[in-house]
Image (cartoon, rainbow, N blue to C red; front, side, top):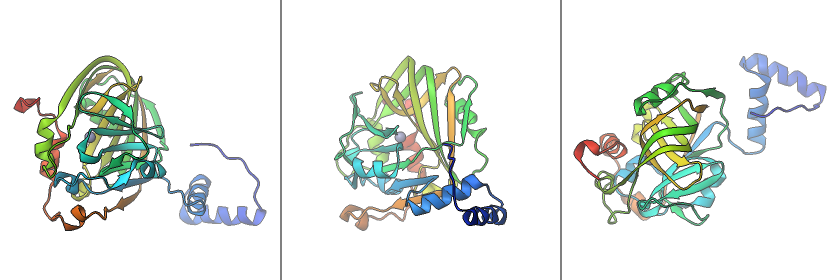
Length: 282
Ligand SMILES: [Zn+2]
């Protein structure tokens, strides 16, 4: 959040105070809402392209480009056309993390079939306890979520003892996500500085989104990363933003318009999002 000191006509100040009393909110939130409307800049809004169900069904073609993703947010997650790696959006830059382990800044013209971004503006900024596992990380973040029915954007920065990630490799066109996920590359890093970009989505959103936590990692030197499978770290800086607006942009491609997306894909998605070590897959 940034501070604003300004002069306004006395009549507007009276009206502003009336509105604060009427809505039982704060000057800050009324001014933010008014400016957001006037400047057509949504705040605390998650912007998503396509649905997780479409991704699960194998709709991986380019739907929008990186340039337009950045118009809707500076922070988030996603993947690239033909499932060519994991996307992480951090500080207004989009990085492509490919199955070879290569990490590069994506060109503005690169295409994506699925991405979720927001203009990151955290209300919470704290230091966590040391984190011993993925479950521990979830528990740390849980402490700063006061609802199970809205979305949250989460950023963690610091030094990591151990990070285990996976990166998808491009499958044959039309392969369902659950099969594509079997050909993922996995990476382990130790004693590494970096950032975790995370989103938490409510259970009811599983029809179109990835319910629960979804984290991607990017190293401080921007050379390593991936979809987070496991983690161990000392205290981390944790920033959390509650998101109460959601914008879903549906693709207009032939593949999306003609696909049968009526099936509940939450289980297949949960499998694709998890670690596969238990099955011995690479
Ligand atoms: Zn991911």
